[in-house]
Image (cartoon, rainbow, N blue to C red; front, top):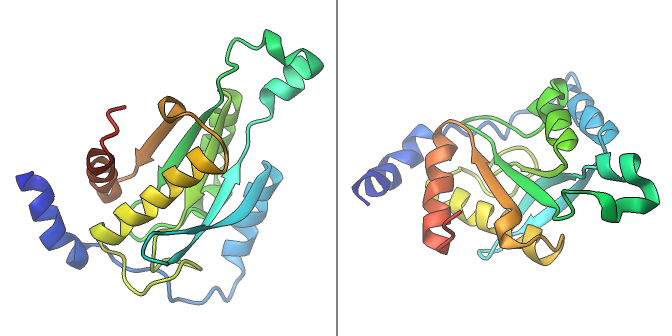
Length: 178
């Protein structure tokens, strides 16, 4: 608890917003096109404090291709999803430039939900804070459970860098122990 209290006091100063810069060379759109080629679909998450969060869901179709109409033979019938929380000053579009991570998750049968926390890219808000990122992650988890129909035990959260601690804080607050 001491660590999270310290994180709360300091995170607003550490997390650098990278949102409000323009994309004059079209790099973000180019990266998004790579994610779309992997089956990515852009969505908007709505947080409990009424912010709109830019996100993308990339579904794994490996078992559809392998088993076709005999999907019941699939030993991994229970669908799994990885929710990725980007690191400091990072966008989910960065993974469009290097699709290796996404393709590995798809080969393992995992869907992937990527999102830009508040204040980054098209997401609402001005500055990301640990409190805001916790709410954004909760919106992503709720979307995976309610809209995509994933069981709680099949949801994995991966936080990169500073957002790894924020992800732990969010899961602790939810009471999720997996």
